[in-house]
Image (cartoon, rainbow, N blue to C red; front, side, top):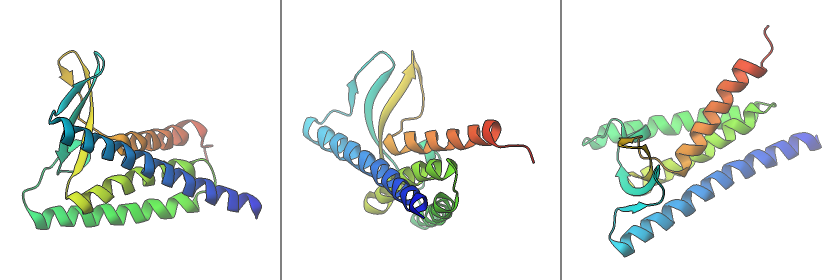
Amino acid sequence: MKFIKNTIFIKILIILLVFTLDRISKIYVINLFDETQFNEIYLFDFINIYFIWNEGIAFGLLNFDNDILYNLITCLIIVISLIILYFAFKETDYSGYYFSMILGGSFGNLFDRVKFAAVPDFIDFHIGNFHWFIFNVADIFITIGIFCLICSEIFLKKND
């Protein structure tokens, strides 16, 4: 029984930690760019901070001018987040922790969709002139969680 309580506590802690890191990074970047009036900060040869408001879904895909469609997509994201919440606490192996990482990131982006009707993205990864989609801390944890789930399915699950 104590193990179950500990795993639930750890999963809640992961969700809160990811959500908090995402909120802190977004608040910092929003305030930074409001104060400086710049929209790009050079960091390294391969990464910049470039602030944009993403009104679409993942990686800025499907930007919508239609409020009804935007709200439908937001409702779909809420439903998917509830499904992920179920799996996060249902799974007893490591995948429950991976779902918790995904959920924390999902909650971070969902919070922004509801509060701002857009998600602040600011990490611009690039190699030379090839730029990847601009993303944020929540997207990093969502991606890591999905990658870990895929790897655990491929490498750690026993064949039935």
